[in-house]
Picture 1 (cartoon, rainbow, N blue to C red):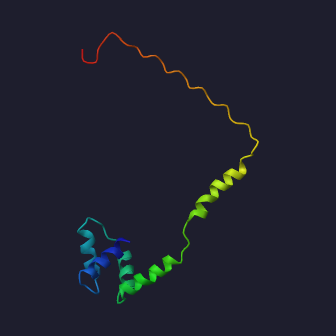
Picture 2: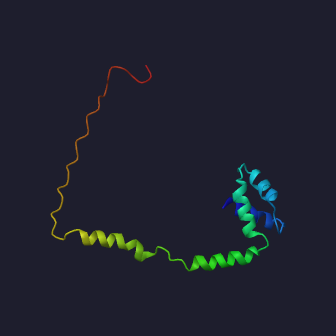
Picture 3: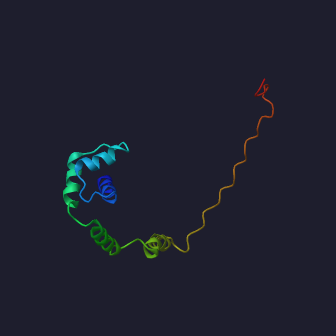
Length: 112
């Protein structure tokens, strides 16, 4: 993702066909090491393509993907309710344990 982001920054900066060196310069300016093979792959895939059209295609693909909506979120709660028997005895509530008494004076003070 960092290589694509740096490539897009170079294009937004006015360089229509950024080279490896252009992308490396952008990434090294923020302290990111570059994997030359991954960078070459990204540049070869993006070279000569209209990035606005690629992003529009990507948005269409993302729009067609299912998302986790209310039905998916409600499914675990419904399954838990179905698994719990209605006539199950209620668990006996635990009585709170009494807090231990504090020693008021232990023979010394914090700032003595």
